[in-house]
Image (cartoon, rainbow, N blue to C red; front, side):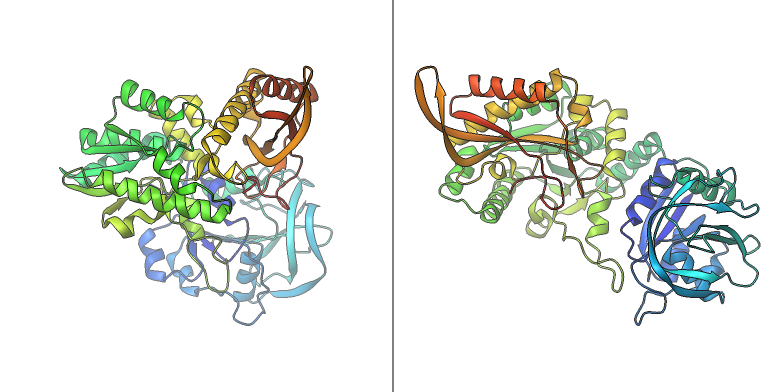
Length: 510
């Protein structure tokens, strides 16, 4: 399988580069900029991309380039900072820009370049840089410029080295897909063989070889990642996979019943349902701090799951739905990307349970997992579900979690989601949900004065959850949702709609 190596110099867009390559059905993998030459050589890339980054090539302790990569004799593409590094190595001149160029610019193509083949002249590109190349290295052709940037693209065809000052991976660059495609197929001569079908076939073979006659256990939450993992593992090892669904009492309405119905009854998976709702709710009694809620839920889940796993004789493997962004974000790159978060899937189970890990999706993005799920026969209703937080409704009830407050939120949220589906806008929204506030207001129902709860509705659009904008929901739809909730859910007399974006707000309220 052909593959592209991406060396990460700290760009906020590095994951986007990987995704754009995958979308072209070519496998890509992100490495820290200081990856050992031996590891890179063993990877056998058909090409290498040097990402952008926030530094200047002349800063102290700046991420540098191991020049042995040129010995691999594969094409290299430098993007933004990556191009400036190439210019520095080969003797070009880089200077601070008079003013930082950020945002849209128009590209002026100067002569022929394989990288810019069939790219429209004067098309929009996305700039984000403080330095610029004022003189390209000897033996390099200047292939494009912009009004502010004299060297917007350069190349040395003989050496197979290319560079662009702008970001072809972002959607704002009109011809970005074409530029990436030119690098992959015209320059690196990659074959587009990174497909869901190939992944499924390869994964089933590898899992069978790894597990053999042993047993594996998986925590099946009903979310996309664990659901697709469960079906993939079932195809690989069948009855040697033991799935456990823990009903923590914090699920959406009838969710646990629907999970058992789909996976155990329809798909015939080996699934056990553990109703631990009373245990979770008893431990959450009186707790109002969001972080404390999360810790209690995580610790209790581990305890319940461990107990269930101990009932399975001979279990040696734990299956987790870890995704590629989780892996990338957990690896600190000194001098470049900072660690965004530490990733502990399913509350750190491997450390406590001493099981060997199987993470079939640790090289995949969420959209790739959905595609694999589709090929495996999972219904769209599950694959297209909006994200749901690990602590469940506990972080959508502000304040103490009680059975009565859970009942109110479940009933209201079911109406909200059902209505946006009925109006045909569910798939336009990245995430929609209800939040029960610790606020009561005066209302009038019939001839009676009420003093009941306020419910907030939240709906956002987003590509990946890192940033989000509030969804501009039609007023008639909001009115219909509000009226239906207030009429049908005892305990709510006021509904409000959240119109804040991320940042500055977060998507979830807790």
